[in-house]
Image 1: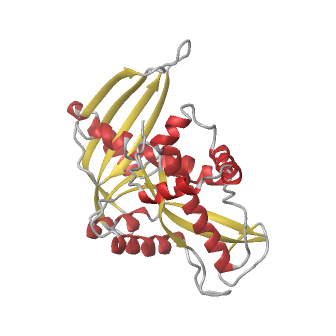
Image 2: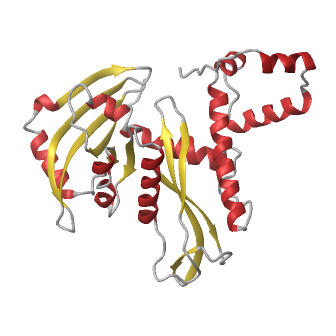
Length: 312
């Protein structure tokens, strides 16, 4: 789950959220987005929750935390049997959010930076040094010689600021790349999770779980901002119309991801088309210039077809 927002220099509707810094007030409309991310690179919008005030002068503003509770309840109601693993960044109220995972039956992987949860970090370091059997080494592979070393500790106790007790696991991944004629470049990643980590699951949880969160930013919001969708453009100042434009944008992005991953597209353009913007231009020109005969149209509607996706 990740937020996006539009900002305005002045109020344009009663539902605007406000933020004042250095005497200047900004009016904005944030959105909390639940995206379904996959190891092959897809980042689908699964559900949207608009964050907005009930009126122009509320006693307390709407916020991302309240929106999370609303969105989580909707997700559980809409997909009651779907196994869900939340990919999140650490936040001040993160354990209030994660309390929902137990009754909902959800898992989570939360990015842990060095300055986050000092007591958890200290216990992880102390116990990891005494548990050599909780380590997995993957030798260098690929053109840049990527090497991965995993370490983990289960059942770490933590007491939050409200004196509530929690038990978490910490998973660490040290990646070292060795490009030709370059010095080794190490990068450390760490997550807290409610998975019970083992030697068999540690690489999968890191590479197909925690590491996928960046896809929400790169394959999701970054593409929608810079790939021709103009996510940050206020298509309308009307509160209902702007929501409609936002949802249509999410649908358009989903369709384009499916189109790009189709086997026929990969066959026709084995080297790709360069960007989502180029794909949109090619599709537009096809609509403008290519015409199907009546016989071809009838064949499209009468023949059975199967859509296959190439995730290689």
